[in-house]
Picture (tube, rainbow, N blue to C red):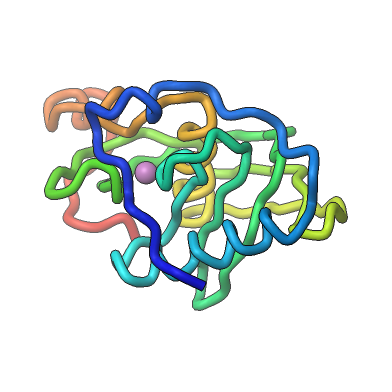
Length: 162
Ligand code: CO
């Protein structure tokens, strides 16, 4: 296991679409292990492979002290809306209001190629949705709302996502 360099906004790779993972091999496993180390080191709650420079459709998130690995994820359902303040390991020092689905259902594979279903509401839906965007070359800064827009949408201005 090792730390990997986190690519920062402005780096073209973050704008590219990641590709399907075809080999659930040792290389994938060490990538996922390194992503976990790197996420913990940076005190993040999620990280995508592209953020450490690999255009693979894989990300990890941490919810309630548990790390979940997603390989080749597909969003199969989402509903509702919520707003939270987001940041990103690739956009150090910035944060902003982003609207996300309140509920998300994702079909994905684990590191051994076994399919699973992930279903979350609230914070987990925000994090999974944020990480999924990375696979499409999207960053939260593309979606940031001003305080006025937040109020217009009927949300209350708050200081936390949880
Ligand atoms: Co991010």
